[in-house]
Length: 232
Image (tube, rainbow, N blue to C red; front, side, top):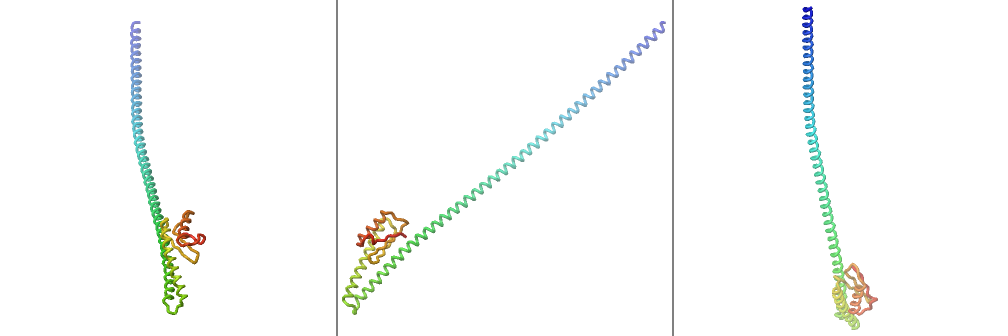
C-alpha cells in the first residue's frame, strides 16, 4: 500500500510538471505571437505614416508647383494682355492724333486756299475795273487831242473825264471807309445809277448793311435803293 501511494504521488507530480510545461509553452507562444503581431502592426503603421508623409509632401510640392505655374501663366497672360491693350490704345491715340493733325492741316490748307482765292478775286477785279477806267480816259483824251474833233465832242469828252475821275475818287474813299468798319476787303462797281458793292465776309448784320449803305449814299451821292450789297 505504501508503494502504491508513492507511485501515485510520483505520477501526480509528473502530471503536474507536464501540465506546467504545457502551460509555460502555451504562454510563451502566445506572448511571442502577441509581440510579433504588435511589431508587425507598428511596422505597418510606420510604413503607412511614411507613405502618408511622402504622399503629403509630393502632393504639396505638386500643388505648389502647379500653383506657381498657374500664377506665373496668369501673370504672363495678364501682362501680355495689358501690354497689348496699352499698345492698342497708344496706336489708336497715335492714329487719332495723326488723323486730327491731318484734318487740321487739311482744314488750314483749305482755309488758306479759300482766303488766297478771295484775295485774288478782289485784286483781279480791282485791276480789271481800273484798267477799264484807264481805257475810257484814254479814249476821251484822244478826242480832246484830235484836231478833227468838234467842240461839242471835246466838251462831252471833258465832262466824261471829270465824271470818271470823280467816280474813281469816290470809289477809293468808300472802299477805305468800308475797311474801317471791319471789312478786310471790298470792291465797288458803278454802272450808271446802279452801284454794286461786294464785301469780303461770310455774313452781314442789318447794322453792317446800313453802315455800308450810308457810306455809299453819302460819298457817291446816290439813292439807297440803287445800292446792291453782296458778300464773297
